[in-house]
Image 1: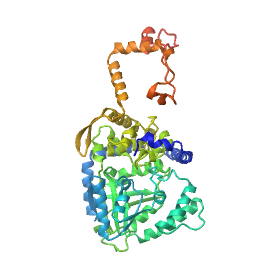
Image 2: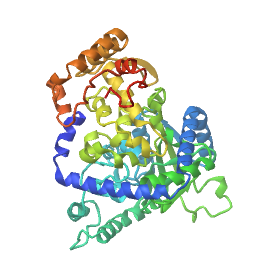
Image 3: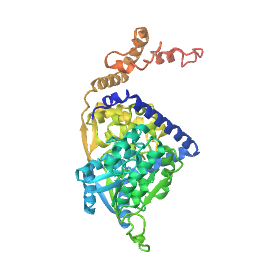
Image 4: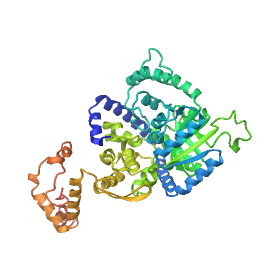
Length: 501
């Protein structure tokens, strides 16, 4: 995968893509603002969500053990996966043990992160996505470009063409004469998926939350496909990142208010599915387990895959608060123009720019470039329902890329070398540090800059030309602030006019 600027090069010139993204992000953004404004205590909910997540992450070792004990007591089996390969191996073995070669999936970022579909395909197991947007992506042999709306880069005409061309290759074909009417497209998807729901013996899911005190998993969605995947198959395998835990049901209450409003701009999700263990657990002993809803076999795969290393970072750990609402994507001017594919990750946009380099490291070209895929405008922080200071983490990761330093990898401290291509940045930072630590030099430099300001170019030379090509250089004041302060006795003798710009 090339660096972000190269990957975004073609995307910013694709007028259809930019039009699709602009329409979708602006629509979702406006609806979200309205939904949030309805809640008078939104700021308090945001702070509560932040504190719950921070508390859970600080005591994650204890809550993970509590989850394992609760799930096991309810009849489930817990598996621990240190990385993507181990998680994929566990899931493939569990599916093979059932004798099945097909599975249905509810939308799951964790399984996309580890490339589960491709790993299952290599084992001769076909995974069918059932979320409408994920179905469009899968049929189009495409990649997701948005956390909440993976096919946001497609318009209705493109979706109609994909359905008409591909559905027959995967199962029930699209109806004859299919138009781009949303109702007809949804009906075609419903008919196509229904036969897979009724045939599947194995379902695979993620989870939005795991309640530690009871071992209950929670999935929120809008289409009902998740409910079908979670209740119809005999075996359910859930792959969940270890950061998805909340301690209690009371804590969950906060996120069930903030997540739908921040993601789909709804007061509550149309479907909130919760399950604890299996229908064969002791809690179901009084009922007929054959007629009860839910799987007879339940496996929970707790995924690390770089999360423990991220938790060890004193600044970047806050990225693990993320509840995948995607509000930050919809307000980001960089995402709106470049789209999601340029990020080279299932986590695009501002949250992806801080999460992917921490989960995967900054050694690759794409991951080293992601912290720079931002204007640092701060809009992402303003809309985040768990107050992740994304700009702060971006600057922190930029320092790591340019300067190198000590990080945690696979539980051990390692020292990263500075990335290539940042020599000028490092030289500029060293020069700034040298000047700022010498007041006399700084004062002389400021005076020299003020007295020669009429000679300053309007654009930067060399590599800086691209930066100043779309920006105005800040004007140099006629007099340094320090000199103005001394000359006017702090502004008291300047007649209120002010001499410094």
